[in-house]
Length: 516
Image (cartoon, rainbow, N blue to C red; front, side, top):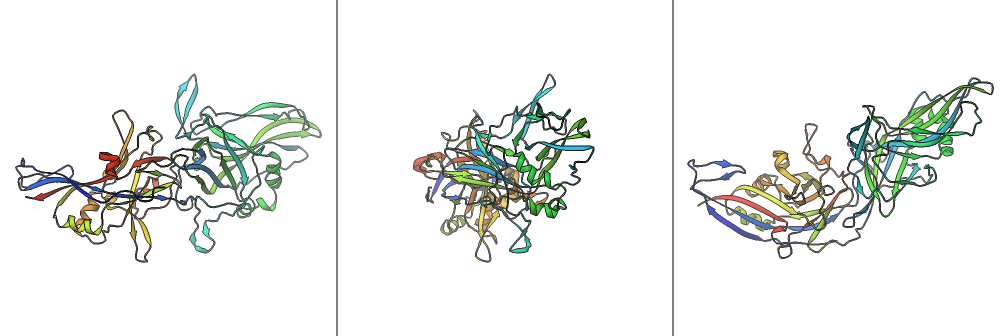
């Protein structure tokens, strides 16, 4: 890790008079004052950058809606390797009738964990719709090991140490349970957009309950538009699932939701490996719903004679409390000198120091009108050459000391004033290569230099943007920055070293006007 980078300094670039306006004052674009009584200029201020390693992030759906639960392994050699796993409760289902009678027999044929991929339709040809998997990272041709375990940690919405508060689960939390439920132990994940059908051998019970004859049967995931969509199908151990579920449908363990949640506390879908791919999973989807499916045959019998046989399914949705688990491993390649890495999930951030007390007082004495202030971070294009795998947006906030002496992550004032122009979005070159990120912090700098109350020079923090960072959420102003992050992408940025990075160094640019 780079421990300390950058030098705080100041360089005066230009000071030019503009005398072409009939009005005494006019403001154009970014508040630039143009007239014969003022002159404009800009300065570049060096910034000091210190990398921050993230130990963990909040990863539960108790306190927010999580759009993406990642599953798999993403080994970016220039960032930390991520082994992303999912923990989920199973929804309680009523009216589970699988009791044999004198005229009816039930047989369990297959149990699968069925999870739809996030995919985009590419169009329909000859009545068949093709898809493209969304946001897949890594190499899907390399198998990622997936194991499904029975979770034995009780997932509670209330904090066990203080039931008056809501519970929290973090990305490095450990969950008990080593009972492997996946058939054969390990499932090899190689996600493909053509995974729209799961084929398995099913016993033909149309003529005899004791038949051993099999035929090929299929399982599909159908969305609300009646389209067959790509999905992940992991066969589960039928003997274990029969004992855990099927044989207990009419027992006390399934008598109520409370009894069921305590008896079967969920599953752990665990990804391991050195390389492979990672895919986003939408666990709140209702069309189709992620589920554990018990495929069975219901036979109408007369003594030992089978009169008819119909297929059925009992589906248990993945619902309730759901958490992500990220196992992070140091990057294969060292961070280049005078660079730093920003990575989402439980990766890394950076502390950005732009001004100290001495510099603030010096700038105040100039009595400038601040027209614009921006922070720019250039991308190491040798490492990050693909705009599709580069983070599409970064986020900048302030760590402010609170009344109790602690540190509170707080939104910058500019994010409230105009989130659309605040910046942080990926900017590309003319040939679509990732180039830089720019943040406009004019409002913050103006208030800081005017001495406005409650405006402090506490360090800024740069991180990968997450939907929970939006300054306005559901028409509610978000004043504090949450620790959630489910964006696994990473970017290598150039630091503020002028000798090494020249005009592409990280820098604060202030444009101003002053009286002549």
